[in-house]
Image (cartoon, rainbow, N blue to C red; front, side):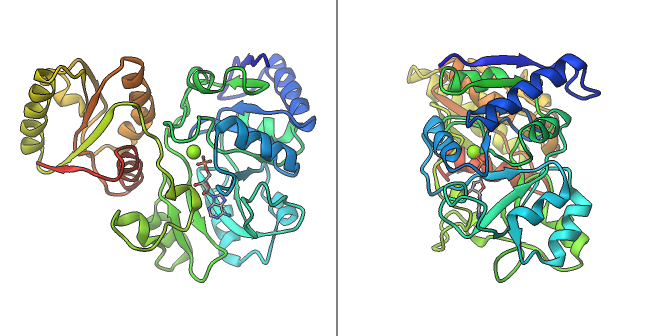
Length: 355
Ligand code: AMP
Ligand code: MG
């Protein structure tokens, strides 16, 4: 299969006539049961018709994803939830009004119209309305319901550009809409509104604190996410799998900034002696201080947004450069930093080192 690339002239909007025509063509591909990768404000999604079980099957096959790991249904207007979800609690309506369009996915009780292939066999459905202009136009052109996981081969870092989508998906899908780099860089927050209590199943840009404030209750996070040794399994099936992993070994280092710097410097020297190709992901201040083969940096240690924005790109770059060992400085794990730490820990196989 040849994968067409459609490059959007004006991804931030207003979309040009030419952009709209390309998006309409991609909508037709979806309606005929094909797959199209598309930009969102988080990462690139691998889209298929959410109401067509054959499309869901194709998505799992293209990604090499286990079919018990459900897909997120993307919509382009709030009312669309009525068709795919039932028993929608008042809290879901409040969160939709407050955070949609945006990087928040809600788990709701599914209606029968949603194929169980899309929900990974569950009777709940994950729903999100992205803020990205191109994404919303594409969803509209496709009939309004796009099932889309991240557009990477299962287990690899999520793609933040069309180039990275092609690295994994060229020849496996019908088309990619190239809308530049997503603003956020990490996947959406997932919040469960179908269970006994409202809780975050995957941290993201919309923090548990922001959700608590909007609802006037204390919204916690699935305990299995906070403690890698927790006996309970994560409630979002996707959080149980190894994820976001580059080929090289990822080593997050925790501790005070000084100690972390010394620890990583010594680690790099040792790795070099062993003949390993070395990499570091660090704050901008320290970029010139490390002696590594590949150094990538972002903002300050307390700037989760800057680090998250380039995190997956950095991991993919390290792979392109065949780096064997990747040290990562102690970026904040507060606020949006909780999502960054969650993805970093997964990419490292749930381990870190203390400086
Ligand atoms: P991705 O789009 O690649 O980030 O994958 C979608 C994520 O949403 C995975 O972690 C899924 O396990 C999660 N997810 C989708 N549907 C549900 C659901 N009904 N209940 C819990 N988690 C879900
Ligand atoms: Mg994913």
